[in-house]
Amino acid sequence: MRASLALRDGIARLADADVAGPERDARLLLAYALEIKPDRLLLHLGEDLPEKAALRYDQALARRALREPVSHILGHRLFYGREFIVSKDALDPRPETECLVEEALREPFSSVLDLGLGTGCILLTLLCEVKAAHGVGVDVSSAALQVAQDNALRFELTERVELRQGDWFSPVDEQFDLIVSNPPYIALSEMDGLSQEVAGHEPHIALTDFADGLSAYRTITTHAKEHLLQSGRLMVEIGPEQGQDVYRLFTDAGLQEVVILQDLDGRDRVVSGRKAE
Image 1 (cartoon, helix red, strand yellow):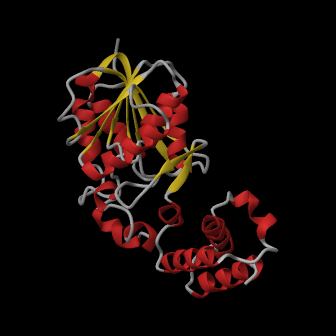
Image 2: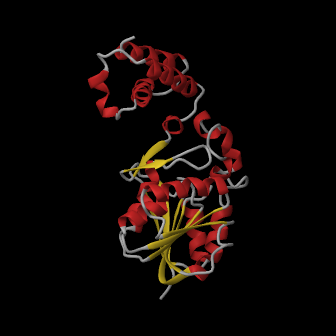
Image 3: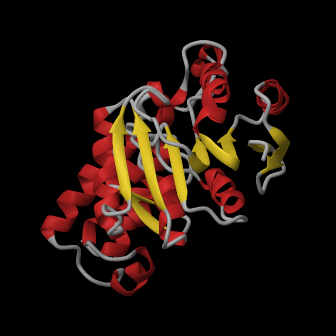
């Protein structure tokens, strides 16, 4: 079969399964099957699809039809211009998290702590951008820490990052210039509204606190000042409706210069504060 016909059939197959954006996904999966970059696919559409690639494509389409995220099938996802290894064991990097990275990079820092590390996309991106900095990443999940370790190796950062297993600040004694976190902020009552791609394929422990969605912020703000150097910053990603609640937690904890920042869609996305000098 010609690759162009395989692409057409793949689009139809995903559309029949009610997958959103079947054209985009079929193209990505066909490029994956051919082991080429997606931007090279057009050059191969007139060629016959090799048997090995056809089988790989068929299997990928079957997985996508069952709502497995494309990123999990490909094994990677783009974040801040870099391809991060992803898996079902850690929350996928998302574009809206890039605004936390952008804000963190507005001021210099030499040490950074990432709570709820996941794939390591926040911490490792910050270390890639600030060559002299070192960091510590904490996650309760050993499987997520392995994903982060794989990414640290990928970006040659193992000498500047230390990964620790534990619950929030439990394995941390030091103080840092910067503390960042994208904690589980979806309330348990909201979980039924998530897409199959998210609810069925991403770790629930990284999505929800199984309560009101604010538990992690309470813990983080309660102990943040103990682990911040003078003038150190705390930055957390939030759900779009949580801005005022998390703002109050920051101010109640004695943090100063507290602000709520919006993402590119104009939704509340990051709360930032500073330990007093």
